[in-house]
Every structure is written in structure tokens, then in C-alpha cells.
Image 1 (cartoon, rainbow, N blue to C red):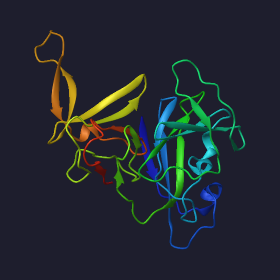
Image 2 (image 1 turned 120 degrees about the vertical axis):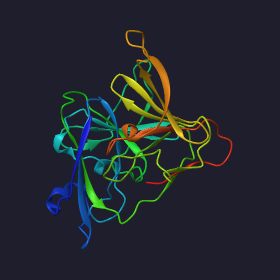
Image 3 (image 1 turned 45 degrees about the vertical axis):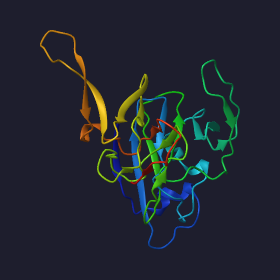
Length: 245
């Protein structure tokens, strides 16, 4: 997956995101290219008037196709809305065996807050880029991980270096960060009580099978711009960790 960012001074590009543009607001757009049918996406922007976005305003419909869905996850409950080719609708959904049960959602409901994430499910042509656009907030609040798992995403238009000093405070040994990828979940890191670690397969001896080696997280583990991740706490006991963007 790869991402690029453009800051556009074009109010017309945001007309579909509702509200009258407020003087002085910076307008932004993030392009996300993902080969996943279900992609966890960030909420980098507010609506054009600076208010919280509705579910229907989370993603630009310019590159979407009929049947694409937005799925919002909150405390174990999945709610979905469907794009019919012209607008977002409550739609219907029939769960398949092994899939999470979805509740019919409301396109006009308030969407997830910046710092959290949602799923975009595309039914075909995964080469279509996805666009997130809106008004750039003056600042982004830190997120307290009150639930586990919790779907999060950096709202900033830059990769998220979660392992850097000051980014995650209060993590407990065994806490995990998981970034979905094509073919399933990718376990990026586990907190060992002092630092975030990840496992890499390394060819220790030439010609022999690769060995799993635990390494300290570094910039190769950065979570890409616009992409969400699961934060899974090792235990519900103790203070909840805080993620600062």
C-alpha cells in the first residue's frame, strides 16, 4: 500500500463533505492506495465547516462504486452503510459464516472521531484509490484506549511512529499493535514492558531456514499515512494507555 498527501486550496473539492467553508480553514486531501478489500482508514479531517463529519462524509465518493460499504466499529458493534452509486444508504447486509455480524447503520450519524478509524469495504477493482478530504483541525486530541480491541489511526498526514518516545504512554507488557494487511492480520509489535518489539525472520546461517528474531521497533514499522490499526491490551486491569499523535 502507498499513500500521498496534497493540501488543496479548492473549496469546490470539499463541497460533498457538507457545511459552509469557514474563513481561515486549511483544506486537505489524503490519497490512499490499498490492495485490501477491507481497509481501515483514518479520520484526518473535519467537515468543511469545522464540525464533526457524518458517516456519509468520511470518504469521497469520486472513486467509489455501487456496493462499497463503510463499516464503523465501536465497542464490539459493527454498523454498515452502503453506497448505491449515487449516495450512501442504510442498505441491507446478510452475514456470511465466519464474518462479523453487521448492524444497519445511519449515513447521517456522527462518524468516528479523529484518532479512531473505520473500515472501507470495496467489492471490486481494488486498484481504485481512496480519497479522504475536509477541513484540517488546529490540533488533534490524544486518544485513551478505553476498550480492547480498539480501532485507531493517526489523524496526521504522515506515517505514525508509534514506538517513538511520547507516542504511547501507559502501555502494559503484552499490549499489541496489529495492522491489517492483505491475506490477514499482521502483528507489528508487542510491548515488552519497556519498548515495542517485533519479530522478523532472519537468515542467520546461509542455506538454513530463517530464524524468528525479536527486534526493537524502528522506522520500518511505521504505520502508513491514512491507515488504521488495532490496539489490543494485554489486560483490562490497570490504567488505560494513551496514544498521542
